Length: 399
Image (cartoon, rainbow, N blue to C red; front, top):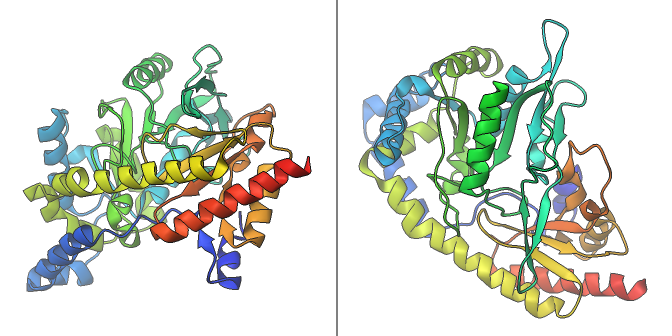
């Protein structure tokens, strides 16, 4: 996957269906612009934006508004001391993972366990030691209309004494899966029994940006580390992540963040503080962002159904995020070969086998899947879908 950037440089007209950038919503950009203009028009706020380092925990006013918002929305018993800021959630995961797992001072080794795989590819290289992740193979539920859904297979779930934390993304990138409330409750109980935290990556989910197309209940307690982000709301460039956890976790994170980053960036908190205070963040997420991506998801599923016809394919039920996960049953080539062939035709996707890290045993399914994003211009997405279907049809015909 190291060649995604070089592929785009070599062919600027490449249809990028493998990236993570959010779609452009003029309504969202207008809200961000107005908020930033208010900051820039205030000399004191402008000086704080450009001229001050923030503490390693992040901007105090922003953290207070986030804590107040979560407490008022969901009744969670938390305060400003339960909230920290990071330079993007990717930075937060690097610190959190290596706080909780890896080579321990007493000579033991701890791991991060992924209860549901495939998982977010961005985690894979975050560990500073070998064999950092373990993973449980999912149960596959076959649904009508060529859909399917992954579930946590608790019959295979074997949490050993080396586990330092459980980690799930909800919704899941790369599949668009949303773990059910029952699965989250079960995982929460197992984590408590083991005396380890449950980390939930909510970058696409609850309570914001709320890119969800199914019912799901937000989850947090003192044994949960909830990681949120402003990126999928429409501000990936400001690099602002949010960690919600018990106080000792926040303190340990802040100590490490002070070493790794010194301070948190100011732009994201400056833009978003007022949005939490006046409720704009909720209105934007539920009123604009959710419908936009729900419509895009359905349109892209419809396009794939039309183009793929009677080929042996299934699509993971689109429950959230802005990606689709396609499974080509019995694909005669690997997902990596399909990726290379599509790149040659001007379409970039993510080959699925990269997302099954942590699994100890090989599984043919992992080489039959690809991930596509559908946030680009609708016409280019349709053209990308057509090319993908055409190439897959050619591959099956060659076997």
